[in-house]
Image 1 (cartoon, rainbow over the protein chains, first blue to last red):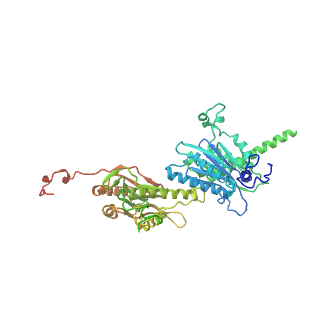
Image 2 (cartoon, helix red, strand yellow; image 1 turned 60 degrees about the vertical axis):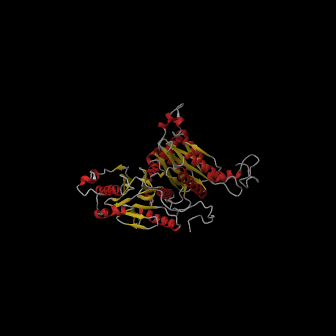
Image 3 (cartoon, rainbow over the protein chains, first blue to last red; image 1 turned 135 degrees about the horizontal axis):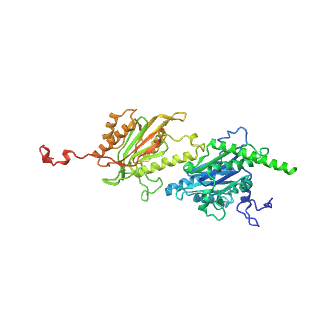
Amino acid sequence: MASSGSGYDLSSSTFSPDGRIFQIEYAAKAVENAGTALGLRCRDGVVLAVEKPLQNKMLVAKTTGRRIHTVDEHAGVAMTGFVSDGRQIVNRAREEASSYNETYGTKIPPTTLAARLSAYVHYFTLHGALRPFGASTLVAAYDPATKKHSLHMVEPSGVSYEYFGAAAGRGRQPARTEMEKLAINPKTAGGAGSTTTEGTDSLITVADGVKQLAKIIHSLHDEAKDKPFELEMSWLSEGTGWKHAGVPRDVIKEAVEWAKKEIEEAEEESDEDDDEMEE
Amino acid sequence: LPAQSTHADALTASNQATTRPITTGTSVLGIKYRDGVMLAADTLCSYGSLAKYKNARRLLGVNSNTLIGASGEYSDLQSISDLLKANALEDRCTADSLYDEDNNEECAGEVWSYLRAVMYQRRSKMNPLWNDVVVAGFRQETDGRTSDSPFLGVVDKIGTAYEDDVLATGFGGYIALPLMREKFRPDMEEGEARALLEDCLRILFYRDCRALNRVQIAKVTKEGGVLVSDPYELDTYWDFKGFVLNKGELGTDGGW
């Protein structure tokens, strides 16, 4: 584990001698221990998925404790970490989007929304009297002006980057490994040396994206160790008219069935390999 | 008391109440028919006696099942439309479910009640939104289902809310409403209702000095939601002997 704060970790307005702000790192830890949130930019849209661990058997699981929220018609946000902190970021995103629309008469561009949230989250890392947000937010949005869809992730430190595939929470390391194998990067999807425009045709679609994310979340989930969970998914695509909406429940159901079958088949193959090795 | 910011010095106060409308729209007509509700209005915004904006939209959808139309000050209509659209968007974002089918959108009856509250509040501050707003759509049953029976209501600048099967604002109240009331039947076909409204708009163009023959028709139906037509011109007939011939040729006393 990293060196203990030993006195430099009491306030987010204090640097440590080796140039770190421990409070921000601790905030990131809160996210690392929480349910996995994934985002995927596909050819024709963006898909968001969140693993919602069910703390209590008596929760009305399907509808309560939502992790994915609509921020504007053309933008949706998924969060993980301290969900109450995440809610504040979502509320701020709604305010930013509506005030931008009122002032400029157009929908807030995705990069602007991410930048505004970034600035907001960062502000809380500057004051001794405030604590950083313990939540990461994935922002999926469409820009009607440039006709481009994009995915951004804002972290507790206040940094935000644009991603082809983003992961936060418990299973982010294995999730990233799996996502890298998918055809989401235009440069690599079309073969080596292809330009961004050449590569887009071979990128996966949101329909595939939904299945792949369902598979990743289910494969990361350990039946024995982890709590039972609800899978929340949303998308923003050509098919939805570029409006942020929940992935229809029957589509999620099909994706989960496909995912479970794929995972089973992969396990059988590796079992067979093990048997072969023993002989 | 004049409507000013409460703590401002009377000499330096910059806020003033609305005293008169500047850019105005004339009549809006509304009628219920078999499939829903239909509204009609011309696309003119007058600047006093100048026919300044001849392609203005006075019939607007505010959510997927509610239509509004207004006469009076055009900037106030734009403000009301922005307010109602922002409400609809906020409702959609903050709804309990990510799935549209689970959520209850504000129905026309609720928009009408909300507008009444807004208009009355503004009038009580002696700073009204200078409009007569017509709201069209459907009501909601107590269990949240969209009612089968259509809704048509109006709210005026002093906050009077009134609902009926047939409505008209402004000049339309004098000229079109009697004709519409005469012809109204709850099971009118769409074509009938539209022909009636077009006829009334044509007569309004003949008689209302601030009207235009470039018009829009809009409807709300249960299946189709809100539909606003593109503006189009109405044919008008001016070949009356009294207009074409000079006074001496009319066979009367030749006078004024």
